Length: 376
Image 1 (spheres, rainbow, N blue to C red):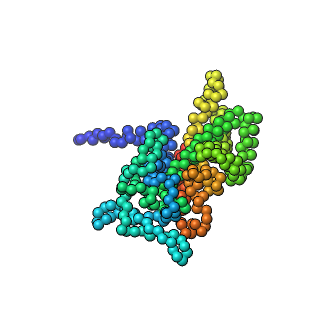
Image 2: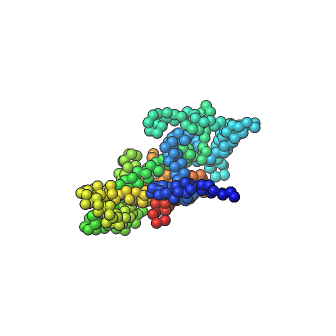
Image 3: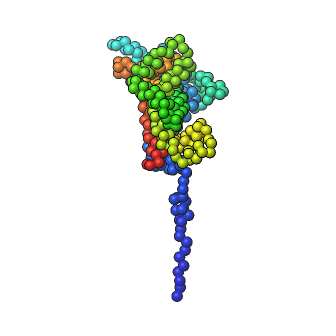
């Protein structure tokens, strides 16, 4: 009589590892990756910041170069084949005035072919702000892109919209990022101090928050932005707009962080740190703040689209950055006329990256918030 000895159970090690205790960041990562829309949005946000970093490399034409002969030129179609051979090119534009309405009309001329090429020379810029170069991803073979390519059309001064959008994305994203960092620092400090000390300090901080939140946001933006002197340079206006947006946007993080600090204030590890003689600063920044990092990251991600929208709104109202600065708000400011939009709809191209990046940040923030929620 043969006795069958059961073999070792397969997959026991994997099952043990699956249920083994995981760190907080591992759990957050797993929850976040299960949120498919948030993960896709994270990729989109990363792509936007790559575009922002390499904006001058991606822009084939000088965004400040104007050409009166190409004012409000329509987007050009890209043709891919020449006699059955792969050769991307665009047709040169001839312009003439319509005798009926005296509008300038642009007519593609197939006889004049402008071949597209990769890694061509163009206007000079500082690559990543470090070293000077003139190499661009796209250009014209043996010609200047400023007078030949208008993939998304041209504005009222004949400036290429594609190149201006690339540079505008960089400005708007980095203003939003700088404003979030300032707002994050201010909101974190105020929330920590208010929640840890309580009493009169908490009362003063909360009254300041309530006053700022009681004032309508847009009129407050307009009042602060209108106070910026008109003779200030682009750099000073840039930092001023960053501070204006940051000084208004810190209140929500401070209030949420205050509530979490008050809930953690009487935890055992905090009391043990006090009994061990730790100072207040060490308790706040070493023992309390790390417990709120995941919440701060999620809140910051949700604050970024609001900052970008704020800059865009100020630029659209003519109160933010001013020409010759280039941002998404400045580009949209030139598309306010209904008549212009009806005749030249390509002036609204800056709306697409603005809407896409704001939506992507919102979905990313929702995913991070859900992933960071210990009770989710």
